[in-house]
Length: 314
Image 1 (spheres, helix red, strand yellow):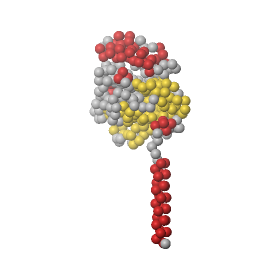
Image 2 (cartoon, rainbow, N blue to C red):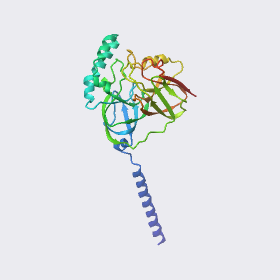
Image 3 (cartoon, rainbow, N blue to C red):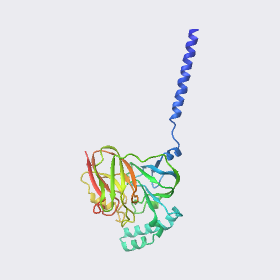
Image 4 (cartoon, helix red, strand yellow):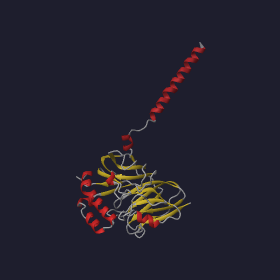
């Protein structure tokens, strides 16, 4: 009798533990893509010349985790398009002047390049930029948190291929719809604050520390520079002995070899915060190790404009 009772108790315990484990496993099921997007978690991948990302996002705060699995430097820029304009308008009216203009720059004919850029449609200058990632090296992941208003966006990367053609011309442009429904995400807590201003440059009260850093970027103003876009913030680690002048030259796409593959040696691009309007705020994350770093804008002659600041971590 006692033996039978013992067997029944053991069977009950086994059944209880099995059911409990099943419940626990169910609790940790992998979230669906839509659940992640509702949380503001946006995964983006590039394996060649494309953006692998959801076609529809939620408004509000979103963290873009951009994995660059290609062999070239890229970035993510979110272009907020005027009402009634779509990717079709971009391909028909915007890409051709930029393609012709870049070809003329490479040929050394700046006058014809300027004439080509003069064919850009008037509505193009109404496009707003709502942030994105800074430049990111192959094999690296950039993580930026931005606030998206509802509407139609183009996600783009206008770095240039080895032949001088825009990455946008090779497929790195994607239309994305942002819904009225907001994400559940709140703005992250920053460990470092960066201010950027056209008249004062990039300002940082104290350098960031080692390890994981969350950097808040405050765009105290914004202006359109001679390369048709505004200032941004890129975090770059550089080796001892490299020329920072070569980096600045490369960051100006209006130079024939500027923003063109290959990127200069000795630099690792770690992301940052792409263009935002005046009063805009965004965040980016980076894992920092001892070494030399520079925060720099992708504008012509960044150092002369003050959009350039170095720091060292030990």
